[in-house]
Amino acid sequence: MRHIKSIKIKTICRAILAPPPSILDCSTMENISPTREKGKHLSDVDIGKILGLAKAAWPQRKIATLMKCTQNVIQNILTTYVFETFQGCNPRREYPRKTSEREDRYILRALKQNNDLPLRDITNKLALGISTPTVRRRRSEAGLRSYIAAEKPGLSAENIRRRLERAIKYKDWTIEDRKKVIWSDESSVWIGVNPRRQWVIRPPGERFNRKYVKKTFKSAQVKVMVWTCFTGNRLGPLVVCDEGGIGANEYEDILYDGLFSLIDDILQPSESDII
Image 1 (cartoon, helix red, strand yellow):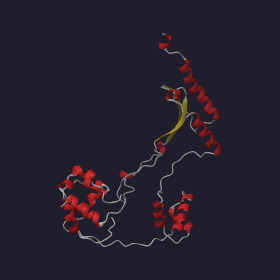
Image 2 (tube, one colour):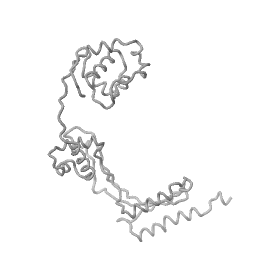
Image 3 (tube, helix red, strand yellow):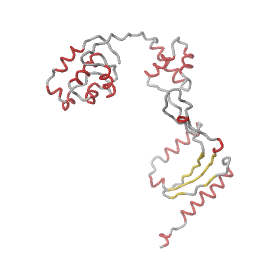
Image 4 (cartoon, helix red, strand yellow):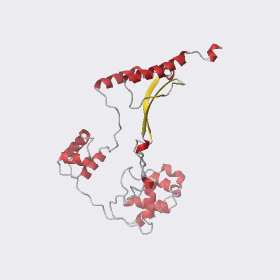
């Protein structure tokens, strides 16, 4: 929280505790205009209003709505400050900005061009004499954040063009149209290991505690590749591939064993059709 000037709470509270009865009525709170701009730090005046409204028995949820902040902020203020003894804090020290507008644009361009590098490497490449936290703040001001990169197959320009053409061609297909297509795919199943990262909540210094360790067993690691297909509400056979993956010849065998058997099953008349 940012405190911008020193002010005593008693001056504010007289004005808050002595409003017309209709204002203290929570049912009429929707008619009261918000007293602060959303996203701004709470000033001493804002804290004084929160303490005064809480003293007047306003619910925390109503106060949070009026002040445009979360209920957790209201709870923290009521826990930290006391209505009778609250005094405004000294003004927060203002530090001069270390970069100019031109340098900010340069930093933003470097962030976009080197989005796969750590911030410390980008800071070194900038050579502006600023620290990594400064670059991090400029990144946040631009609405950028760091995330774990999603993994997708690499595509050439020709693959992208053909995929786009296919998507445009079939974008107006209905569910009934899609039920007439046989869909197939293969997948690898790992037995005895989970390839995904596992997150745990633990105290510091307990990294190797058995309670927080993800257990692996080398002898139990088995990779099985399977293939299957379906169309509409009809399921095809589940084909287990040979160990070591599949090539062109193996895939042809899978089509003969799996895909054609489903087609024969679809073309074969059912008992209801014969009757």
